[in-house]
Image (cartoon, rainbow, N blue to C red):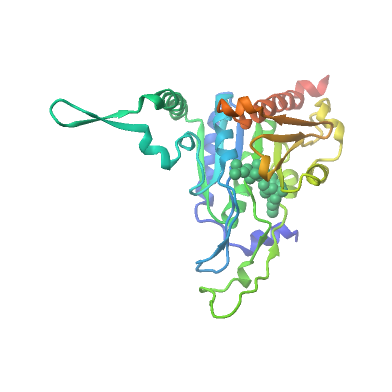
Length: 334
Ligand code: PMT
């Protein structure tokens, strides 16, 4: 049994898995029949419980900025978006108004009769209107489907479930895996039932989480356009690591990035977006089998409030469209 099959056999699936899969099926079918491509965005950090009745967890830094902002740009680009995000992490649209700023959005105007009227702060009107307009359009078109996870287990079961549900839509699906996934966990059979005693020093025995990229691109959804992210903190190893992961999870023939191969050959084009923790909002490197290209933000772009995700998404959309064109039956005859 592969180590990922063992993982799924031993851990508990989330109670809503079946329901999520049928919601995804309906969402994807209706948007595909309206001619929209689908992107599946994962976002936020996964949480690893130390106990069965969990009081303590191992967590990571991600608050989901990249995922939430990318969703807005994918929606602008005409995609139907499935957003698998960590509960409480940033969400598209509302992320533009952090909770500590929320009261600055409003002001009280004194009326002649002594009462007050609530108004939007004039300096916030432009930003609020822009976001509100986009949000309303998305509500009307129904192009955004939000799904929450909390633990590593929920994330991985939902990742597999959503991927399998989308597999029938072939190359018209993009996977954009921006979640920060835990690499270590405590298997269910080793997790204590109750709160770990604090009376003795704690030694944890963590097990490696199976790398899910392999079954994802080879079994669950092999014909999608898969984009994974590689995060490091050491600038000297990032490129090598990202290349290794591209080589490991891509199907073999690197010429496929030219998008000229026969669509009958079951190929997966992979892009790895590599980023360094400290500079991830300013620069990323897009690595494909044939290219390594930096996307970066100038100081003036950052000062003007522009975001690197806008450029990443535009770049990926172009690659995805070429991928779809090259995967069509007509492309395979030429
Ligand atoms: O949320 P923000 O604060 O905006 O930060 C964004 C980000 C830095 C989290 C994001 O840009 C990013 O890099 N996400 C990927 C982080 C990560 O998990 O990197 P990794 O090198 O550990 O994993 C590489 C890839 O393998 C990831 O696409 C991950 O989905 C996948 N993976 C990881 C572990 C695992 N067991 N199975 C996997 O398939």
